Length: 229
View 1 (cartoon, rainbow, N blue to C red):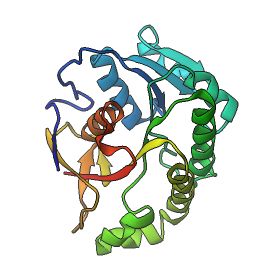
View 2: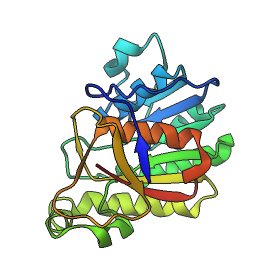
View 3: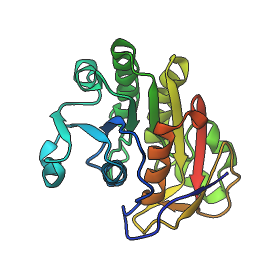
View 4: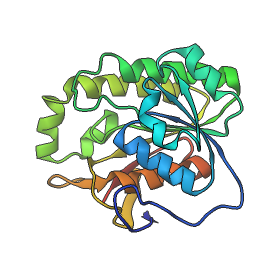
């Protein structure tokens, strides 16, 4: 499946505005991919709430969004901001660290519990290509990295995804290949499975566009999507 996105500099992923406003909760909005999702949502005039451990990182857009201090691994924190939302997009990450410290498994469980309490169904969760069953389609070079440097963090991501898949949420788990900070290319591949060769990449801006679109559309509900250029 080919998905068309906007062209432009990093995070310039503007598309046509919608006639309705979505109440959207973002987890991980202070990270580089999360900021691209935030830019996409604001361009569409969505009502955005962000749960952030470091809310000061969003001072430049604080006048346009609701920023709530909190931790995505704490059920009460997540539930507090999830009330009344239409959808949740999670782009949680560990930055340059390859130590998961239980972030993804704990956050996934917290999100599932909070969503069930708040009555929110739609969840779009960003993972990484090579996690869980996507490993079977990885190239030789990718498999080396996944089995060594990224082994611990990928194991924690896989553990968290078990909780998502076992839940009654309308989840979509997204597996992008290696992320770049380049501009949106305007076209990318989004499929249930893609056999990889070499070291495929995709811009954060294109990933953000897919995450945003998936949150507003039931097409990918209950399914996983692999993304690459």
